[in-house]
Length: 495
Image (cartoon, rainbow, N blue to C red; front, top):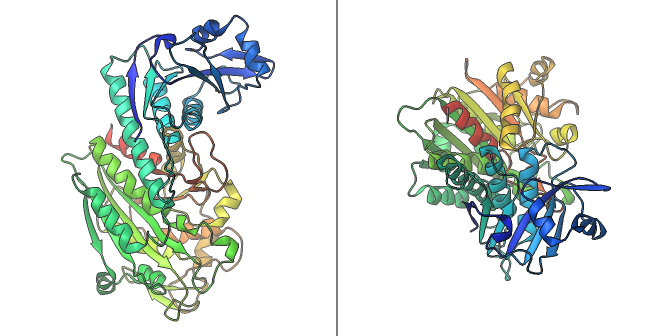
């Protein structure tokens, strides 16, 4: 596993297998970023022009490897683009560091001579590189060799706060990578029971208490949503509770995650082309679990209770049918109209359960709707809420964590659509094709307790990257929403 530390040495003297520096500007003029000037000068008086001749670009995340020929202690310099903006943002540093880390896979020690004077910059470089160094090789006979150690060069290497910043970045990156591992695991290996077992094993030696409710307990307690989704599978569902309760907690947060370990669509079966990535439909459950472990390891004075609602949505003679009526946890009845809209059913049970903990805030996380991807694309999560202040606050928290989220409304008309059924309290699916993400959020809101603030994060777009790696984002599971949940907990705790 890649580790990170700080050092206060000149870039040219850094003992490393590779040295990373940054450039800004445009195609006609490349400008050394802070930390890069002395390196470029040592490589030659016209080396900036040489970089242009080599095709180097300041485009964010683009890299160019150059031998130092003895001009620096490191044998290789990697020049990474930081964008055209004169002011370098934390997210630019994060993405550039991630791209450099991917380009230098297999190196034992890599020194980063990027702008690193503030805590925000140090955190961004460390997080980005640790996230970029990630690779999932569980099923490969030839294993991936990531960077062994990344060294952030900074004049604040002896500063206690800076050291704590790097430690925190390491814990956050480890949490994201844990969620990525879960998402990337093949569905024949990750199913409700095995995921519950993994979460329980992860909790050993931590301050997180894990309890698992199996199918018998779910039936006895009336979890009609989770059972209804999971009944078509030979692998029965599970509800996993993860609880971190420090003394003198400043707040109590509840996280609820959708954990569909594979989504065939049930009897409303998906087309073959739509099933290839459906192992990722448990990304929400992975995110909330990973966030709880990170909050505990960071020692934040905030209580967090999370529910991972785990089921496999499969077609069989025992599967839930369109037209079936389910009695949810807490007693509300729901008419199922589309078995491929299963996530809201398991989440509703989880939210209703979280009400009983009387939290200050409930946040659910789910790869819930294709409609959200249509609205926001594949890099932005949607935020919907019953609280206007929270609707404004969460995208800002996400931005501080390095994630993109955008507020969406829950129009009043959705309340009428929820009640078009004549045989149950609520319709499970939108009666028309418009506003699918908004309808799903309105459905979930029906299960939130009176007076409890709630937000829904629809991560259907960014949870799984089907394209090429970019910045610190790998191909496959991305760990979407983990950093936002940790940031939320930190800010609510004052940490």
